[in-house]
Image (cartoon, rainbow, N blue to C red):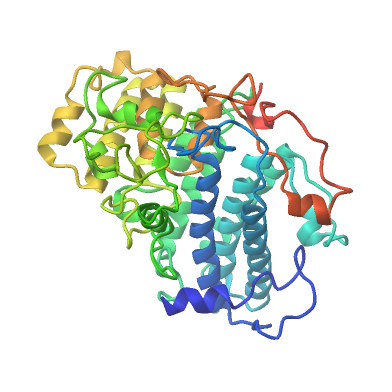
Length: 465
């Protein structure tokens, strides 16, 4: 626990975008391995924090109160997430500068990969955001905004630079295993993560004419090969933040209620047969069943926690008190492979990846082998290579990306075309949400550069042809 506390307080954006005067409580010239702790911790926590925004739009979660703001596509103020991701990127900028200046090339490589990841988080929620001017320009306190395509290309370039650094042999220092809270100093695993993130990025532009499924597959060939390769961060000030939501919910600080869309996706209502992963994700209600909350409607039994509806569970290996935060899983990459291979016309590879992804996710959750095999062998799952469809791939991937912000990218790429997926009740838009309004903090300090408001159902750059 102390590592994370030390890292968080070490360097909260030592320069650039959020820099003010020197803070005497912060270390002004931290060692590069201390920055590594900060970087790996914040990247994982920011993944979870962005999942708090997106999981209402993907209908993993629902508000227990009627007409909740996120449920119903109202303008929300997500200043906290905006600030935390920019503080993290400011730390990464400092880490890159220090690492390159001391020939700590492995550290520079990790920092560039995590910069690409978090730049993608902010761009995928808001669209145009500050980057070049914020960190490399002359106007770092009121930076101009990069356009979406430029941000996408810069993320790809950062991953390429990171891979080059991680492949160097002339580095002056190793990655300290105790300071690396994700891969514990394993350079090969960092390289696999970088290739996985590259595959994610390349696959995100399926609506664009220059989408290249073979480039996606080539990246995946260098990425994770099992669940054991994944980045896992489980050092917290307290407990896993999803578990804290569950604990707070039990104490009547309501949150973490599962959407009926997601529950019905698993419990047999939507597809006619139960997915055994539901028992590893949530708990049965007091009535001995699995029941979700309709987005926009709120809890039909009133604001209570008698457990007549399903919540985030501390009994799940994904959201338990000591469960790690994982920014990208092996199972997710298998579904990226399945989609890219199908789009490339290789149905055999696509089908193998699809089945492997289901099996890997069930194994990760600890589903009994008999239950796992029975589900996979169901005629609606094992459809044969010739009958595999994008709809089936997205259906299964939706379960795999539970609570991960990447799920909202998939949902927009797939135009919300999931079986029985409904608009929330009392929605403020006529269509599904596609972006988030810029936060109040940014409007207050950088108002001259914040782009003009657009309707929240306006697609981002990669979400349109």
